[in-house]
Amino acid sequence: MRAASRRPGSVPARLRPALLPLALTLLAAAPGALAPAAAFAAAARVIYVTGGSVYVDAGREQGIAVGDTLEVLREGAVVARLRVAFVSTGKASCDTLRTQGGIRVGDPVRYSARPVEPSPEQPAAGADSARAGAGPVPIRAAPGGAPKRRTPPVRGRVGVGLVNVPGAGGAPGYTQPSLSLRLDGSAAYGAPMDFSIDVRGHRTYRGGASDGVTRVYRLSTAVRDASGNRRLSVGRQPLPVSSSAGLFDGGLGQIGGARWAVGVFSGLEPDPAAYDFSTRIVQSGAFAQWRSAPASTRRWSATLGFLDSRDRGSPSRDFAFLQASWMSRRAFATVSQEVDVNASWKRALGDPAVSLTSTFATARLQATPRLSLHAGFDNRRNVRLYRDRETPVTEFDDRYRQGGWLGASVDPRSNVRLSATSRARSGGSGGSARTHSGALEVTRLGSVNGAVRLRTTRVDSDAEEGWLHSGGVEAAPWSGIRVGAVVGAQRFTDALSGSPRRVDWQSLDADLGLARRWYLLLSAEHDRDDAGDRVQTYSSLNWIF
Image: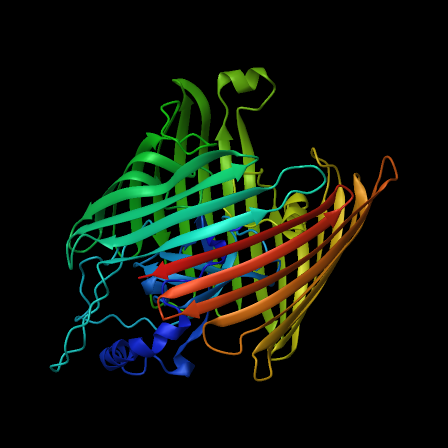
């Protein structure tokens, strides 16, 4: 199902002319900050994904500002683009502009960092108000009589959507209207209080019957001191470090400074199916974070934590987690590791006392201005993915996600990228598998700002062998308008039975910015496989404020 994952950030392109006075004010406050030579390539990583919102572990001190565009990478290729909606000292909350694959915790993020020049005129209040992805920070003009301008105390979006799947092959179709609400901000200008609300609901009409679901992804409030270094948040919220702990209903306290932070948390895990309040699973833990100086060109961060999970009072899972990242102008590396301390009932089933689980590591090197190399390893178990769109490509990538990979990308021209990646997996429940992929991306074509993307992948595994091919074109002839089309095919042969399996799909999409604060998305997809044909249409209208 499609939903908010393809919606824009809270600052549409057509709103930019209205932000000119604010941009000039910021320019006056930090001379030269917007000079092209001052910006440089930087990297971060995804620490949480919920609905159409993505949180990354970089913020204002790492050169990110509201409205910036970030790129999510997978094996050296761009799989999604994000727009920064809210930013704090060390974290940013982003909306998903468009995606070619599911965004996952740990994915590297690339962006163009702004220079960091601390100013005594920059207010301290709210400096870390979005440490867990929360509200906006007031911005004051430079001295000299210019009027002060502030961001609104509340920002967010309200959206309505409609999914329609006609019946086919004797199976009934269904219609599913939806409503979503996202709010982030401060209770009032300068108040030491933040809040965040993310609620999504839909009702499904099928064969004369209907049923509805409402899910609360976030509902929390926080109080903090004037500097933002001490913060207490209560409610449904994500853990502000990348861990498989996910959402919890409870409290989180943090203290810290410019280069460190420690936190403790405890709460209840929501029901994994309906996101209802549940008292079954209790989670408690603590974490500590260290990071480099904000102005350093070689940036690093490290997080160490522990979580205890109990199911109705019995030990369910105890694990420590470690995350570290390092970034320079030419290289980026990140690693995430969970270490389980197994309870007696697990040891009785044959598990060791301590086991390494959920490993993720990736590195990228810009060997020359036109050549980059990337490598990685991923054995994370399947977890709930809060993404809103699944296609044959995302389903395929999830099936062959685990394993190690090595690849390279070359840019023969500034708007052309060729990439190749090989991935290998041995053993496990899915058996051994080897995939080899090649991709071509051409952007900024002509006056319509067009783009062409092609991909081909060869699979040889214990379960099947065959090919996946996909191609897409898009155009953005005017600000706030994008149209695109994608076609693809899978051709596989089952390794045991020798029977063929084929899937074909086509999709059309249009994203339209209307009247500055309104955004319309229209999409249709047709899939055809051995089971028959399926058509799905989706439309949504969002008001962004």
